[in-house]
Length: 252
Picture (cartoon, rainbow, N blue to C red):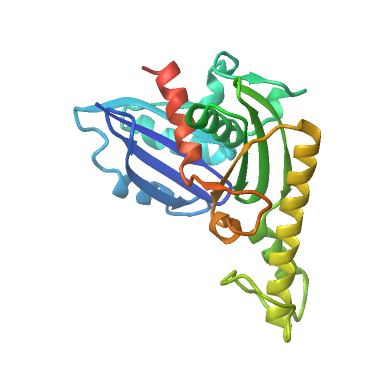
């Protein structure tokens, strides 16, 4: 039996085929804002109606309108579509926060994935549309987190708000301050986010006073893996791993 799970973010959609041992078999990426999402989705996963495929599909989603669109597409294929918050996840982890309803599904999935993979204190940094930090304690407790501006969004906002500053992409870590505008922008964003991330990590450590595994995921994880105050683990599929654990708990 194969399974289907996915993560719907503000920028990207990741859908994965999962094999009978709950390992990721295939991954499909889509643009969340694509006007041709229905066609692209139908084309890329055209074999989901095969007999050895479970008809239950599970997503984490922070974009309700996109989730509803995808749900409609799958329902036409007679698939049952769920979002992780449809279930009482407090039976899976404890959430030591004030308003569980405000906690994003992606951050819940990251935390569940980290807890079940490492069974230890963890901090998950997700370099997505926002840069998020989530703190998980070894006994399966989600203890809160931090949300900072996303790198790509910050670059795009700066470019769209200024008349003369150019747009640019991260390429390599700058060794010195800039000698031209592009170099200055590169230094500012790299060093700025390096400082932001390390400062937040120090404050989390000072608050908790415990040692934690540091897990990086998302598009910019590799750029910072050697620039932080402690060793890191890159887990590009930590969100999907969390969704898989939720699937196993509630849909099998």
